Amino acid sequence: MTKKGWKIKVIKACKEAGTYEPYFDSVIETLAEILEKRDAAAEQYKETGEQPVIIHTNKANQENMVKNPVLAIWDDLNKSALSYWRDLGLTPAGLRHITNASIGKKKRSKLENAIEKLS
Image 1 (cartoon, rainbow, N blue to C red):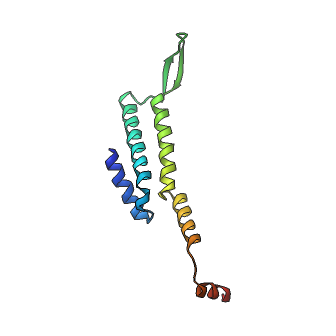
Image 2 (image 1 turned 180 degrees about the horizontal axis):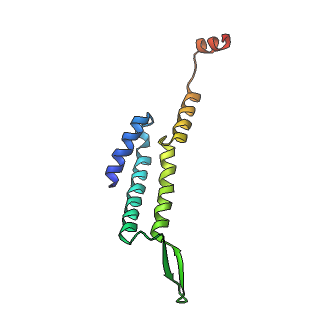
Image 3 (image 1 turned 90 degrees about the vertical axis):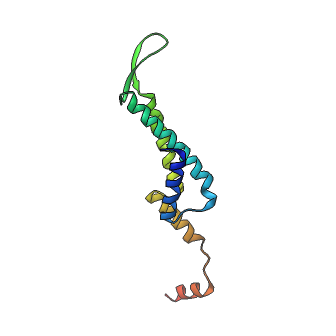
């Protein structure tokens, strides 16, 4: 998916979760870039035969089996994206954190405090 497509999808998800704020747009933009690159890495992995391990020839002309670099890049991008999803409240833990933080910031009126003391 393109960066623009991801941006639309992430904004929609944030709105559905109730976490969207316009000042998150730069974070959403960064996440969309990461997801576009992750998708490109996944596509390249598929095009090269989906081999998780490849044979690499080092400078000494010795062959070693190594983790496919494209798969490693995909994994790194996926982990980066996950942290952004979490920060935007698009994971269960991230949503819980945002919800709890906003509840803690809510100022209570004197009446609400008095009612709580009576309870």
